[in-house]
Image 1 (cartoon, helix red, strand yellow):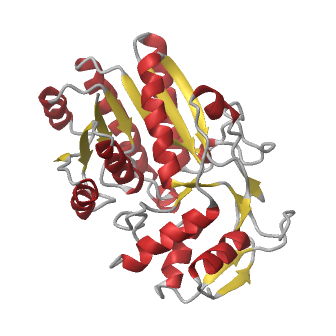
Image 2: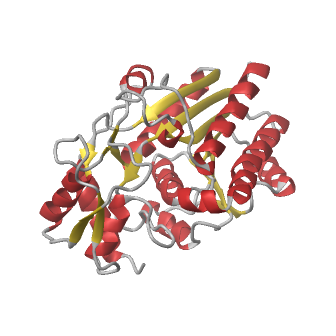
Image 3: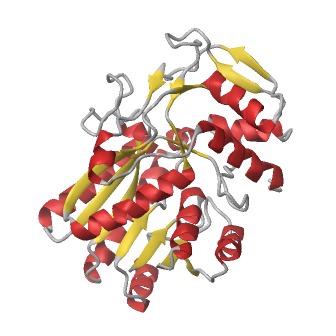
Length: 333
């Protein structure tokens, strides 16, 4: 099976390329490096001892995509490519809608032209209404509060409608919760540009001395220690979920949605304390006011993925903290 990975030089995409190559699957990656680096490709090659087939191209470029599909017999696509910074999406909504939606439309048109009928779509738990009862299941209502999340909902709608119109098409939309950790080699991991939006890379960067301290936004929530809880999943578990989804899509047509998370809420303080304990570090942090828009808790309902994909997250918070620090302390970033 030959798999095309869009956004193959990005955080999750690079880990997926490395894992699939390690399984001796044929992998083709495409990325325009707008939010990633060519260094990731060399690191994938080093991890696997193989040369990744890679194209530098913008997914919205129909001519470029047509050439890639014409050059290879592609069986399935994993579609990671997207802009993902929530704050930037609020400041630059047109840029986000143009990139995330038009890239998906171009991909769909190119797939149809070349009779490729299977795609795994990178969606997000940010599409859910955060005020819904926990856990969030695939049937929980969606209610985006920023352009990034809206772009994911719109792409899901496009893919769902495409499946309705073409019964041969198979789409699996994976709604991720908080993805953290790094490859066990320490060569690839999460390297966000600018100040990280998520707690784990901010912790790792603070541990390396790139930030003066951590700011914990509120400790008066109705949770066990007063700080917000979130569902964290190791990137290597997430990769396994994508590989299982490829196999599922090969056997099933239509549109299907799965949550990928551990199914438990872990508090901000618990993440900080675990990172300190596992890595033998002391992190400077202070407690600040609540951040507008933060919900007290969010975690995934995982029964559907377990039943239909056979997927269960295996790696622990300790694994996430250890692997994240192993990557960060060796990174030049």
